[in-house]
Image 1 (tube, rainbow, N blue to C red):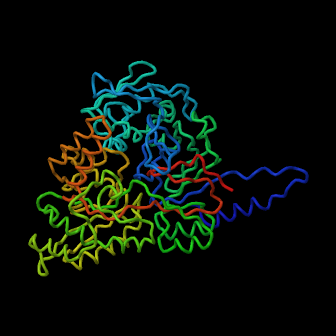
Image 2 (tube, rainbow, N blue to C red; image 1 turned 90 degrees about the vertical axis):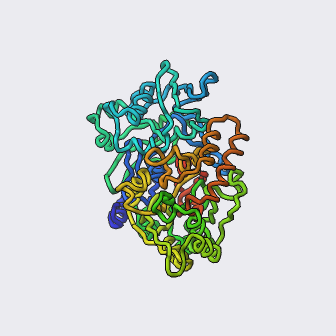
Image 3 (cartoon, helix red, strand yellow; image 1 turned 45 degrees about the vertical axis):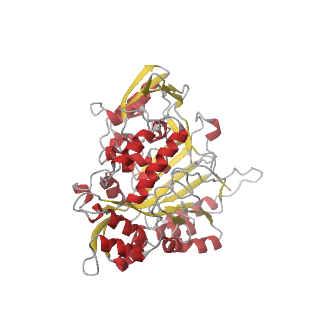
Length: 535
């Protein structure tokens, strides 16, 4: 990050330039500077690391997917909208085939044309390990979510056909995960993704114009963006990794940045009093412990998993977070129609937790002992260390001794894409990682037996055949009412069987200078920066 002195010197230098009499003064450039929670700059080559925050700041602003997220309806969960595909239809004769129309007249930031061949080339980057452009590091970031894609082919210059391994009605919701980079630029920089990341090229509303590894990335307005309604108002967007919350607050107060992600909860009142804007808005976020449910883990016993869920003082956590989250009792919040009516309504009930532990064979002389992987920071992780220390005391009070394995965010992201018995998971019994319900197939990725890591995100290898059957059926039917009913029944099982400790739903807090105008938060892990102005 640039030093405070560097910012002040630059500002002082600009202020000292004399005005020319009679000459109109140009409006100052529209520059928005953001402090992220990431400990390192997310990769800039079109498949960002650093989880949701990587896609939020160095994914969707600079790249399009074939299907994009729609940020225009903030009172609803963000839905999908055409991107580099103008439309997509299921083949009525074959429910595995999706016939997609390619948008014409789009150019990459390097000036080359975006074509059907460009899209196929990007799919090969992820799914074809024999292709020159195969990206072994980035491929798992996409494949861990879009695991059901079987084949992709160009039917003609305007049509691509995607084939899934099984009927998958929610498929369009997953396509935003694969962003489209320029094959021409990859060739020009030497045919390596490391070199491409230094001079990246997508089709998005912003162009990445400067990358200082580990420090910051600058993006400028793409004046020729194909969606004229989303040509940015900003001249420049600059993002800095700032994992320490106190560093982010200090940078905001001193004017080094205009916007910070996740202000520390205890700073929110004083920031408001000082005139800073505080944005709180629901989005599809759940903060759990994903339990290792294999034999040998204490969480193989459903009674222990339920006891954990009754041992958490969620209201106390919300108070600790100064109202920037709300209690969670499942993957979905209770007001969602998918939540259903499970038998277990998880509230703070230490006596019930103790009774469950006693039933499972634990007691004062035999506490449950478990190790949980937690992070120092990260996308959607809120305040992981103080939150876990708070919960640790609640667990201790009912007879559960929790030890923490504290790791960097990137280490946790690698662990959750591998199995609980792999070296990457470091012998822990649970992972405290923020996860989403951005699309209706989320439960299949997290809980189905088909989704055992590393295939997908069922890290704990929780197994429940009835739940898996419901989730399989939900994604194989195309009637929304039937889908909702199947998902509701599956969610009821998930809540009652408790493969996760459900903790809170984050409210996506961020603090901004009063200069930031026209930002409307979306119910999404990503946001639209194209409408933001600086005043």
